[in-house]
Amino acid sequence: MTPALEAGALAMRYRRGWALRDCAFTLPAGRISALIGPNGAGKSTLMRIATGLLRPTGGAIRVLGEEPTHRGAHPGLAFLAQDKPLYKGFTVAEMLRAGEELNPTWDREYAHRLVREAGVPAHARIGTLSGGQRTRVALALALGRRPRLVLLDEPLADLDPVARQEVMQTLLAEVADTELTVLLSSHVIADLDGVCDHLVLLTDGRVRLHGDVDELLAGHRVLIGSRDLEPPPGVVEFRATGRQATVLARTGDVPGWDNNAPSLEELALGYLRSPKEAAA
Ligand SMILES: Nc1ncnc2c1ncn2[C@@H]1O[C@H](COP(=O)(O)OP(=O)(O)OP(=O)(O)O)[C@@H](O)[C@H]1O
Image 1 (tube, helix red, strand yellow):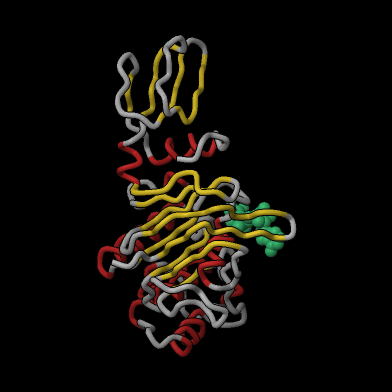
Image 2: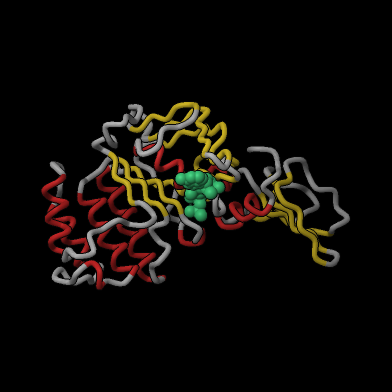
């Protein structure tokens, strides 16, 4: 199957410096991928390149098998930008009607259902909605197009915990029912656990870690033991408190240590806290 997104040696340089360097990864179709990285790591830049809004300085990216062109995004791609551009003077219903007029693949019933389920009144003006309500409308506009690939730039940022869970469940249902591929950037890593099955972790414009989440988790251990113990090869992060050491390592079970499977959050935080380690 054609990957939903493929990047090879992708690089982007702004006037102030490099935002992406030598980025290579593949996003398999029909998966929910987490795009994780600290502020300024290059997540939005990567998404904007995929939509064709930005031309990369070097390398290549293929979206649903095609390179983006200046003529606009691939018709199967939907992008929800961080600033969620919506017409403030429109009502929610008018915004959905505009979505319908602009998109030949529009699914009216589905878009209206997403807004209804979010409890957003259809007659309310966009400008009067809360940040979280605006996000839910923007998400309905992105998914209502029935895209094959959707890029969501921090869609959870201004949602309350229940709404975050609802949005993740909506995405999970979509992926199960329609083979949609999702790439979702977020700083709330705990919310991605159990939902995202693929991971791309960026630090300083480079891919530090990527791949199938289950495989990555199975290939790492959180080791707890005496700080006098010799850590195994593949240490990602070493922390010591008193006599005890906690080590995140790319390894199988290590004798002498208490071996624990990391959660997605422990794995990601270990890499984010030690950005200078060798790329995985
Ligand atoms: N239009 C621009 N002109 C110059 N520099 C830019 C521009 N857009 C982004 N940058 C820089 O490129 C780097 C990557 O920015 P980007 O917005 O892609 O990061 P991000 O991972 O999305 O961050 P955040 O988590 O804060 O949203 C940052 O150093 C940023 O300052």
